[in-house]
Image (cartoon, rainbow, N blue to C red):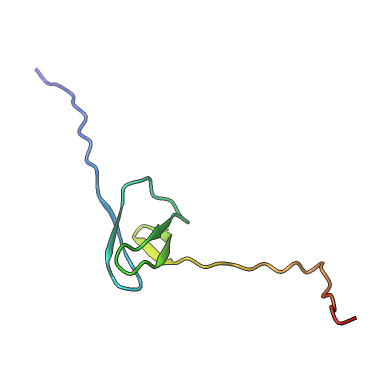
Length: 75
């Protein structure tokens, strides 16, 4: 008699902080762009690769509207 049982192995997902090299674990579903704060150095990080898991600093992008003309406030 054979039984078919499903065995689920939950692998721990870990990435390294680029600032202090601390291992950072992820309990939620991992996706590109996921933001995480390093518990050691408090750097704001973002997932940039899933295989292997790679983290980089989160960048704040400033977009300039090319349609807007500069206004001279000294008129």
